[in-house]
Image (cartoon, rainbow, N blue to C red; front, side):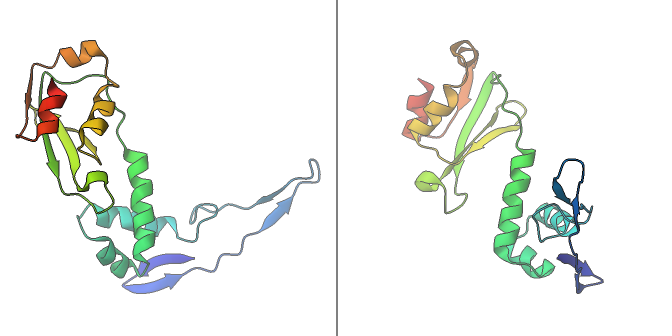
Length: 167
C-alpha cells in the first residue's frame, strides 16, 4: 500500500489483512486499520495530501508527479472529495442574480459550463456543466414558482438562451 512521501522519498507499507472467524455466528470479518480504508490500496495520508495539493490549484498531472501516483488516481480522489463537499442546494434564490458561462472541462455537455451568483454579495450559488436552455430550465424549475417570482433582477450577457430563460 502506497503511504506517500517520507522526507521526499517513496514509502510503502506492507499490510497483511488478518481475517477472523466468529464461532458464535459463523461469520468472518477482516481486521481494520486507521491507515487505509477497506478495499483501498492508497493510504489515508496520500488521500489527504491530494486534497491539500488540490487546494493549491495545481494540475492533476503535477499532483500525481509529486505524490508518485497516477493522474487517474488523483482524478478519482478529486471526484470523491467533490461529492463529499458538494453544498446542499438551497430552496431560496436571491433577489438579484448574475448569469455567465465559462470554458471548464472537455467532458461537459455543450463545451461551456454555467455559473450563477448572488448579484449583491457575489457569492457563487452553483455551477452547472451545461449552459443550454433545456438544462437551465430543468435546473431552475426545481425552485417553486413563488421562489422564482421573488427574483427582481438578473444580469446576463446577450446569450439568447439566458434571455429566453428569464422570460
